[in-house]
Length: 138
Image (cartoon, rainbow, N blue to C red):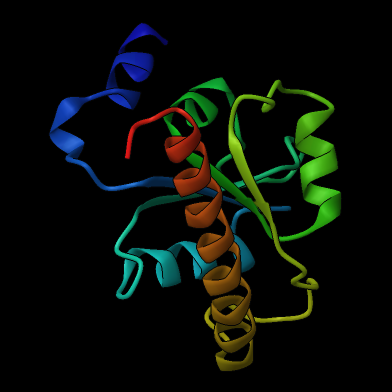
């Protein structure tokens, strides 16, 4: 496990924002969201995982949480499931409203998710700018 924790902070990842995308199984919605966020205009470093340890292909764990600058949940239910098992209080969290009715990269899912992500990251950036200003960093 120590090597995984070291890798979560590997400096060769560059200055890209690291965004962990979480759905139930890590197969459809979160990989689609990760794909959206890894491309322009976002260009983030992304990973997709599942919230449910019983059927996720790649289940969320402490290493993924440590790695992430931001955690994007596709639903309130996924956020509740993860926050019941892990401390995510120090992370920036975005919660979307993406029902589990879409196939991987479904054009409608891409459209809805992109709209929600654009708004959510705009709000995160505004919040960070406010905090930086209050701290005298700008």
